[in-house]
Image 1: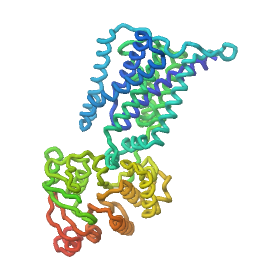
Image 2 (image 1 turned 180 degrees about the vertical axis):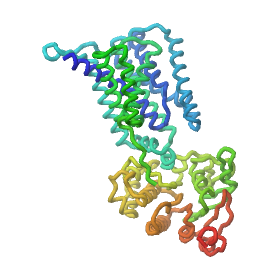
Image 3 (image 1 turned 135 degrees about the horizontal axis):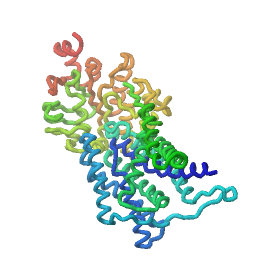
Image 4 (image 1 turned 120 degrees about the vertical axis):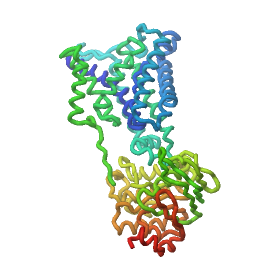
Length: 293
Length: 234
């Protein structure tokens, strides 16, 4: 039973990674850039929810909506101000800019909110479900996290495959020039991508902060790196890859912590990543370029 | 319909197009022929707005479109079927065609044009659920042309439609270009296959290293000794 408990909590952690990884993978797929400030959007979303709930006493649902709204706008504004002017620049310049944006956000948060750790309130729920005569306890939060991840994946997959905007996004991911010749506005498409990724980051923030309820300006950096790893692990640019990579990463991390070593868990996670990339450089579900002339 | 005036396009300091002027009138088929690297594709991309003009102007129906962004140019009635087709390999044939109609909102008209494209290219209808990446080169060319038609263009820019195709298929594609033209779509055709292009063109321009060196009716150029020597293999 304890194994099952670890597995389920690993699944929940992996769900959060997967939701964050979606932001990396979608932005990479369409804008062909690594948005290293993505983790800090999580942090911003966390602080908005914290202040809305603890300081202003707003109802939980409203706090979540505010947090998502704020992160979405923040993501789009960052793209417009910092990345859009670099559309024609080398990818190295964009990467360095993204790292700069990340530091800027962390330091701005430190200035505004202080560097002390704040306790994230119980916005969602703290109950739990007891199964098998109390042998297996699953918190409602774990269930909410996993269900949220499933709903997001299903929703996003049908959005990308069925809607006109989704198909335009896939067209941009494949060939920007040809997409423009269809009359697709690249800037709008990139903005939509950042909006979706950043909105999801806020959802991840609330799930993450509810599970590990401490809030600090660097809160987003470690989950950000882990989720980025998950995205690469699954195959960057691939949405199912982000899900698979996230879940596997969460499960591996949790099981190593439980059975091998807490200190070594990150080392082991990254070793697995290196091994996977050595065997399959495009990641688990990464696609090979299939060009026909 | 389309007028290009003294257009200069640069890649950094290199001048790819060195001041060319030409025009395409309503209902015409006009071709730009020239060797590899002469600047044909650069010209097409500049008209579509993918590349910025350094100087000169591009006028569509008395409106200056030189600085208009690419998606607006499509909306104004200029569709391009690009070199190497560039179909969206991971999407179905039908989704590719519908992406061609991205700027349009008239659902009934889109449906009608889709039927029209399937009539022009029955092979696309057979394969409408198939992923575009799995089509043969000839079928991808048909798809790219159908996709451009779906924008309901006033003028269609066709860049090297014969590239990599068998002579038989090239003839089929050129017959279809004539059909499309007879449906009222003006055509600007860029080709290395000068013989085929001159055969269907009302007028033609010869472009060499970024400059127009000769122009005339398709027939005139077909009979010109210089052209025969340089482009028609003697």
